Length: 309
Image (cartoon, rainbow, N blue to C red; front, side, top):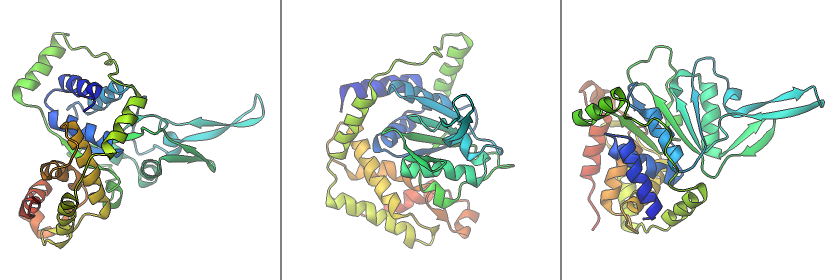
């Protein structure tokens, strides 16, 4: 693994306490070129987690608070008439950045959600018929509040499929949460932005190295057997798409790179399968009535697939 990246992850874990696995999964997602949907209650450090990542890679950061009256042009930008020189001028929106935090994405109507999701898929934005490419490093992290649904517009399953991962943010362990409390109450927490550990060009070079990580035919078959099983089991009403299989494969390469290996193992697949599948499958009604969770069903499903030698 790149030494600068190793230093970045170490500093990232020191900065974001109690979220070691989610921090590494977030890194795997951005290194894979995907996007992340985060679900967690308010006050668990989601914004700080994303802002810190942007600082560490030396990237530009923008945050959009999604509200019911937010318009697509508030995200993408618009064209205005400049009376001074009698010409039209394009004002680019906050989507023209490296890392974009879409805070509470389910609070805005489908039309505005679609404007963001289109940019995520096509890596370009159209303003008044003119198409503008986005940065080579364009990473969207959208958040949702799992305990408040009044006045929200839940993302349809087909739109959730655009996200590489869905991460769930829980409260940290007692000792870690107490340390956060102590740092803030005693004013010993440094709220300033951290210095970059690498630049965008180095980050793109690392991405190319990850593309060379070996993933054998037997591991690819293992991925497909997992994904196909989501479509065949009675516990799942709607199974995962082909995009899900691609997401597992690409994120497993990034996870192997973070583990300082040049090949993917079945254990890598097991780690990334849950965040890659939990937002892409829908449980059968009788399973939901029994109180089973999506994560529980995914664990059982992955455990039932034969591990390749």
